[in-house]
Amino acid sequence: MSDNIHLLPDAVANQIAAGEVIQRPASVVKELLENAVDAGPDKIHIIVKDAGKTLLQVIDNGSGMSETDARMAFERHSTSKITKADDLFAIRTKGFRGEALASIAAIASVELKTRREDEKVGTIVRLSASKIEKQETIACPKGSNFSVKNLFFNVPARRKFLKTEQTEFRHIINEVQRVALTHPEIHFVLTHNGNDVFNLGKGNIKQRIVNIFGRQMENNLIDLKVNTNLVKIRGYIGKPEKAKKSSGEQYFFVNRRYMRHPWFFRAVTSAYEKLLPEGRYPQFFIYFSIDPDKIDVNIHPTKTEIKFIDERPVYQMLHAAVKEALGKFNLVPSLDFEKDETMDIHPGKKSGLKPPEISINPDYNPFNEEKKQGQSYQSSHEDYSKKSNLRNWEKLYEEPSVDTSDSLTGAEKSSDDNKVAVDEYKMKASFFQLKQRYIITMVKSGLMLIDQIRAHERVVYEDMMQILKSRKSIVQKELYPKTVTLSPEDAALLIELMETLSNLGFELSVFGDNSFVVNGMPAEISISDPQLMIEEMLGNYKSHAGDVKLAMDERMAYAVAKTSARCFEQPLNPEEMKALFYRLMACQAHNYTPSGKPIINIISIEELEKRFK
Image 1 (cartoon, helix red, strand yellow):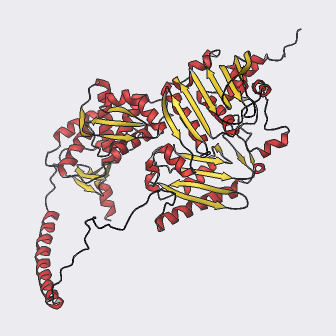
Image 2 (image 1 turned 180 degrees about the vertical axis):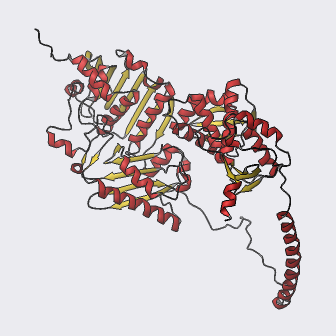
C-alpha cells in the first residue's frame, strides 16, 4: 500500500495561507498599509479602482528596500521584525509574521518598485500566482510602490463571493481609517476611481478624527486621560446626546494598533448607563499604551484580537476613566484649546455699537404698585378659579362620547374584524394624549393605549413597502435644497442605497467630498432636518445589516420608518390622533411594529375595577 501523506506544493500552501490572511480587497489594503507605516514615511497614497478588484496601489516615501530585500519580501515567513520567539512579546511594529506579501502574490499579480534613499537606482519585482516574472533595476522615487492587480484571478470561487463595489469599498475605507487614526503625523490620501475620498494632512489625534468623520465631531468629543504604572489611556469619548443608532464610530487602539475587545467595550458602554436612550451607542476613540510584554498580539491571523495579561484592572481603570470624564463634562463646560479660532471683542470706532439704555421713572413708588397688583391678582385669580373649576367639574360628569355598544379590542380580534369595527367606530370618539407619547381612547372592554411612536413606525413602514411594491412614490420637493455631509463610510453606503431611496421618494444627488444635495423627500414623512434624518436612517439600516432574512428593500423601508418615528414624539391635537388611529387600523399588522414590539395595549374594565378595591 502506498503512503498517503505528502507535502503540499508551495503554490497551494500559499493559497491556503492567503485564505486566512486575505479575505477581501480590504485585507490587502490593511497589510500593505501596515508595511508602509513600518517603513517610516510622512506620506502614504492609496489608489483603488473598482473597489480593489482591478487595482490596489499603496505608495509611501519611507525607507524603501534593497534589491535583495525586495525579492525576499515575497517569501513565506520572511521578516525583518523578529529573529526569535521571545521577540513576539516585544512587538511595536504593525506587521511581523512575514505572511502578507507571500499570500497576496499567491492570488494576484503584484508589482513592487522600491528604492532606498542612499541608492541611485531602485528595483522592480513583478510576480503572478507566486511566480517571479521580472526583477531588474529601475529609476523610481525613494520609498515603496506596491501595485496589486486582478485580485483572486486564480481563485474564482473566492472572487465570486465578493460583495458589491460599494460594500467592498466601505471595508477599504474602514481599514484606512483604522491606520490613519493612529498615525496623525502621516499625510494619508485615498483615491477611488480617480476621486479623492480622503486627503488627511498632518496634525494631532483630534484633528484627524474631525477630518475623517466631519466637523460635527468637533464639539462632540470629551477628553479622556489616565496615567498608571500598568497602562496609559488617552483619547476621546462622545457626548451622550450625540450617541448613534449603530456602533460604527467606536475604536480601541493598543500601542497604535487597532483592536477589538468586547469586554473593554462593555466597560465603556456600562459607564453610559442611564445616560443613553434605548438602542443608542456612544462614540469613542480610545488609545492604550502598555508594555508589549503585557499583551499578546499573535492570537489571530488578522491581529485585531489582542490578549491582555491583566485585563481586570485595565477594565476597571477604563470604566472609571469614562465615568469621570462624563462627570466632568456634565459639571463643567469644556474649553477646546486645540481649536484655532480667535475673536476680537474690542469694538472699533465704526462698529456702530451703543451701550444699553435704561429708562428710569423718578416718581416710582413700589409700595403703591404692590398694593394695586395684589388687588388685581386676587380678583383675577378668583374669577379664573371659578371658571376653570366649573369647566373641569362639568367635564368630569360628561357622558362618554364613545358608543360602547360596538367592540374594538385591537389585539383581541382578527384583522378583518378590526376593519369592520373601525368602520363602525363613531366619529365622535374621544382621544387623549399622555406625555406626548401615548394615545388613550375608550373601547367596549376598557381603555385602549396606543404607543404613537410605534404606531407611526408601523404606518410609515407599510407605506414604504407599498411604494416599493407599486414603484409609485410621491416626492415632496424642497423649496431650498439642502446639503448633507457624511463620513466616507456612510457616503459610500448612501451611494449603494440611492436606487432604493429613489424608489421611496428621496431625491438625492452626489455633490462631491462625501456631500449630497437633498432635492426632495417622501411625502409620507415630515422631517425638518435632512442631515439628521439620513444619518439616523443609515444607522438603522446598518443595525440590521446582519439579518439575512431581510431583503435590502425591506431593510431600507424599516430604516426609514424607524427614523421617521423617532421624531414623532410630539403633541397631537384630537384630529391628528384620530387620523393616526385610523391609519394604524388600516395596516395589515397593526398590533406590532416591524421588529415585533407591541403597539396596542388594552386595560380591561375588570383590571380597572381591581385597582379601586
